[in-house]
Structure formats: C-alpha cells, structure tokens
Length: 157
Image (cartoon, rainbow, N blue to C red; front, side, top):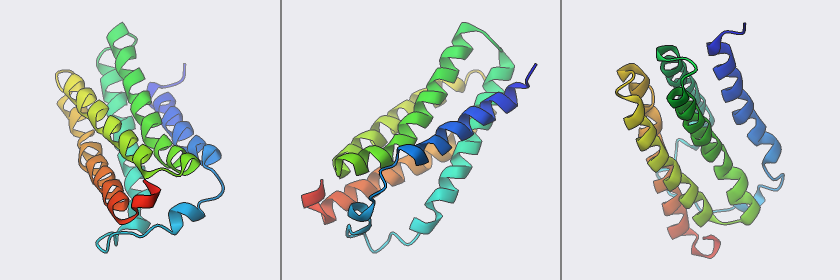
C-alpha cells in the first residue's frame, strides 16, 4: 500500500504543477501593470507559496493520520484540495480574463475557505491547524496586493 504522506504530497505537487499548464502564455498584460512601491518581495512569491503548500500538505497528512478513511476526514481532504485548486487558479483566471477583480474574488474566497478549514482542523490536531497559519497570513497579503493593483490600474480591474 502507498503511504498516505506520499499520496497527499503527490496530489499537492500535481495540482500546483498542473497550474503551469493552464496558465495563459501571454503574461504581458500582468507584467505591464503598475505595482505598489512596497512590493519588493515579488520575486520571493513562488518560494513563499511553495512553503505554504508544503505546510498545507503536512497539515492534511496529520489530519488523515488522526482518523484515516472516515467520511469526515475525506470531507476535510476535499476541502484541502479545493483550497489548493482555488489558490492555483488565481493567476490563470486573472490572466485569462485580464481582470484583477477576478483575482481579488479568488483570493477572498481562499481566505474564507482557509479560515473555515483551520477552524475545522483545530479540534482534530492543533499542529495541523498551526500549519495552516502561513496560508492565513499570506493569502490576505496577496488579496490586499491585488486590491492595491486595482487602485493603481483601474482600467484593468
């Protein structure tokens, strides 16, 4: 039997990696947007999200280990998967529709789902909930940054 940590890690990797294939090739629109002066950490964003996805996968593994195969655990695994899918669709959908507002909506939905997932996981494993905190911190930063981009580029909202 394949270990659960390997399956969770592989699904996390495949969903994150799969987003590269659905990203529109033309990113000139996004590249030409005016950015806030304080956005000096933009080159670190892929690394930040990698750490967040690893923490999320570790959180999912801890939850799975507490009660493997139960209906509620499967529901939580679905929520982890949905949260990752929502997160990785931010760029492809925003680029496809050339709409910063879509990015802001996706980010807001991710924040809400992240909070709900963390609250659901907390009674099962405090460590698993703690591993979701990087998402809870960073996702609002990304959504706020998108709002700032809208303010600086109103014609692209």
